[in-house]
Image (tube, rainbow, N blue to C red; front, side):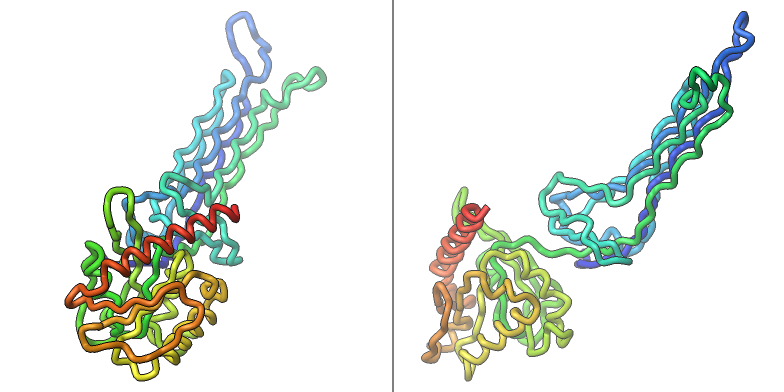
Length: 331
């Protein structure tokens, strides 16, 4: 399945049914009162979070969705049936914006939750609703109100506990494949990863977390250079940043500063997250002498020999739990 993290769709809620003008006509009741029923309400367009989805692929080809119209009212005070709702399934982490205004209509993160993104129109009142002691035979009825129409921008931000950040070919995909069951494409050239990958790291029952492998960042990524701009938003929901720097990097402090600068340009809040530095490709030799400020841990690992992986995973788990606890305290 192709990874699709952005889609634009048009949604049309259903119009309400018209109210009815009708009068009772029964034997022995030659001048019955008004009995026109109300129209039914138009159907809504509803987005529902489905934990089984991980992409907006379903919206790539179909771009328009329309809910059902409410039925018209009828005589004998019969109200028209409501129009059918349209429910659209989206993956957790979907942000819904009004394309025209940029307003965020919903931020859908929890499986099973839903949001009405286009409300159906109300049904029109029948003439029975206008009867009064001084107006016993009204011939007025309301038309149904139109439903809302919106053009929506759907944006997917992956939900992960740890985000792997590094320059192209830093070893992020290889690391993810060794500590989780994820199988991203791996090759020895830059930009092998053309889409974010998620992997669940299971240490033992009750101890697991999600890691996201983000396509490599280059200088200017936040302004659109390379592949970074398209995928930087997937880091925004992570709790911990894990920077990968190969042991053969000539200026590791400068590389870390550059990676942080790109993240900060995209969102200053990212730099407030706990940070772990990983010397990757440890099988190529020992890491150089370097000093990293404001990091909670530094590990040297080799995805080829598995050296250091267990210690790194334990650190990730600890820092994630500390971040969760800190967030709970703030709330």
